[in-house]
Amino acid sequence: MTDSSPDTREWDASAYDTLNAPMTERGNDAVGRLELRGGETVLDAGCGTGEVTATLLERLPRGHVIALDGSSAMLNAARERFAGDSRVSFVHTDLREPLVPAVTAASVDAIVSTSTFHWVRDHDALFRHLAAVLRPGGQLVVDCGGAGNIGAVLDVLRALGYEDHPWTYAGIEQTQARLRAAGFDAADVRLVPRTTQFDADEQLERFLTSVVLRTFAIELGPERGAAFVHDVAARLPERAIHWVRLEIVARLSGAAAPS
Image (cartoon, rainbow, N blue to C red):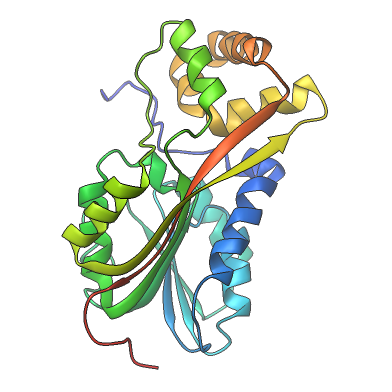
């Protein structure tokens, strides 16, 4: 990215908040898979505007959430949502980079992440960065795009000449191997299909613009980006997005985290 290139790491927080129902549902499911007593410190890795963070806080009456995001707009929306709540602190950093010292090494009891990790190309480095801030025995619970995710959209992109895309959609075995290499064990890794249906073409195009194809739309600019999204939507076989979610439940090797 040059100095004049658009920053595709930034998100339109207000638009996302009107479209995030599928991501919030999956995030709430991920929070439900955490084993919590209520006093832990949990890193919300890719907190967005804080919808899932709010669910996490319900389970941490005596605990603390570190809300982390690489988008200033998303993080600012989360700051506003939780203004005055001393149980939340905020970290603006990129998951592609080491999390220490932005997050103190071995200071976190658990990490939860929703709809974020597929935007990080290097999962080997990502899992190492996460392991560095987890206490021994700490939990990692993830929902992100996995192998086969948005298959129909990828088919359309290839037909339009876009062979490269910004996502890592990993499979079960390679994810388990990466987790082991980073020091995790007892990993339950699954690929789970889900579908989001849209009632109107306009809804589908708004979702594609703000979520699925947002990097393409940003790089192409408003006019060309809108035409591109419209073309992709028109070529899809139905007014739906078919997801394949990579769900991870793992623990960092070592003694159980203190209660």
